[in-house]
Amino acid sequence: MLQAMRNKMHGWPSVIVLGIAVLAMSLFGMQSYFMSHNETFVAKVGKHEIDQRAFQDRMNQLRQQESAREGDKFDPSIFEKPEIKQRVLDGLIDQQLLLKANADWGMRVADQSVRDYIAGIPALQLNGQFDAASYRAWLASQRKTPEMFEDEVRATLAPALLPDAINDSTFASDAQADQFFNLIYQRRDLRYFVLPRPALADSKVTDAEVQAFYKAHLADYMNPEQVSVKYIEVDGAKLKLDAPPSEDELKKRYADEKQRFVQPEQRLVSHILINVPANATPGQQKAALAKAEKIAAEANPGNFAKLAERDSQDLGSQRQGGDLGWLEKGVTNPAFEAAMFALKKGEISKPILSPDGYHIIWLRDIRSGESKPFAEVRDQLVKEASAAQRDRKYNEVAGKLSDNTYQNPSSLDPAATALGLPIESTALFSRKGGTGLAANPKVVAAAFSDDVLVQGNNSGLIELGNDDSVVVRVDKHVAAAARPLAEVRADVEKRILDGRVAAAARKQADDALVRLRKGESMATVAASLGASLKSESGAIRGQSATPAPLLKEAFLLPHPAQGKPQFAVVDMTAGNYALLAVDKVQGADMSKVTPQQRKALQRQMAQAYGSEASRELVQWLKAKTEIRINKNLM
Image: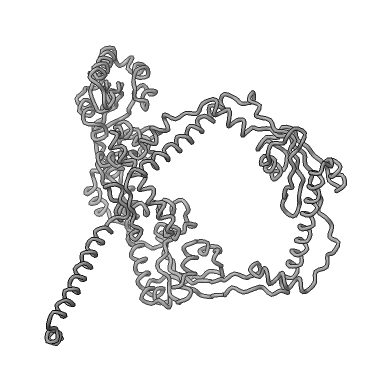
């Protein structure tokens, strides 16, 4: 073929055609190269790229959090919606903008903030206090060093540096609080009467009316589409395990992981901290050192706690007399640690400089490192080995179930026979779910999916929880269908009559409103309609005996002019209507606002103002930063 093309391509026209083809392919290839380069990020904030991995990690993190919160009600399809993906990406973009601002403006997370955050983690506490042994064990279980975890915590806290600084500097004035109180506790004088439901002059409903209403509201009288499913469930808690671990296996596990059961040498420490600002001048540093040296010279074991309560600038330990509890290597910064382990029991150090400032350290006690014996941890090892064996068994059986039902998509029988698991079934349920297994949104979504319902295949493996999963297939399918008119006729007739009553009631209310606006007295109008006139002076939002629909409308009406009430018709639901008059509006009675209420409101307002200021800061950062989004990779 190539030889034939060569034989036919002679002369300058052929050369031109070939040249155009080569140029086109060259340009196309170059374009593809550049396009593929541009598609390596989901978003680019300035020079920083948010890649697919970072985006998917955040999606997975939020998916897991929502799954843990919602449990069986969790619907994973929510995270496939474009608006949810965009919201997650917006959060990552905002975070990067704040991190860039931190770098530009020289802001960093203080070491003390990291320590306070770690000390506040409930899992690392014992009797409400930070426990170094629990911290060490947790780090070992996560295969992390203290430095690695501190870096993670610092990265977690960093995006909040600017918003927290804004919140700490935001306040609400007394005048702003008064303005809010005047609005929320505004008083209104009102009158109202509820109209009785009018009697129908014509209560006959013809067949033609019934037919017309039924056809117009056919969607209200549909039996929903329903399915029942057969399923095979793998529940790790119900699986039979092999023989329990032998003594030799337990001892080998103990020997392999002995480091987990070693209690390192610890120090019982108190300290007094004199802060030194990150950008301190030489004068400030000298003043801080002088103050620390004065305290150190005065300190002794008898007065150390009082000095800490009086002078320490570590708010986390100040109230406890500077007590930091039992500490071990790897928990504090290097300077503090070196000084702490150089002291003898009962000694108080000279001022030690760290990134946070000057520390005066009192070593109160020493606890030597020791290993827990095998006998003491044997039960824990048995429990861990059994849990690991159960996980392996579950993963093995669940994997085989998934493979078998995929290879035999039209039946559950081969998998049930091969694995010795029973085939169970549910009752009929709709897309809104049912009871038991059918109450799980994941199962409902799978049962009504195209692959399972229309194509007739087994579902994939559906995770119901930790070590619990199921495969389903449709057993019965009942299509949606309208209920016969004869079955719903009574309801149709009732709704037609209710509609007539509602229309008559509305006309009666509108007519009454016209009379009031023409100047007829409210008492006269109420009496003529057989209604009882009621009134309330100084009604306040949320603090009134007036029915909620009336109270809501009362505070929506404009302020009345002198001697000219504002009137309105209010829908009381269920076909009932009321006539409302607002006669007078007054501000709040400020004498009833307590100092505690004022302070609480000012705190809430300051938080709200701070949040809004932070949002405006992010918007400003966005406006001055080039941001590119590649939706194809979301």
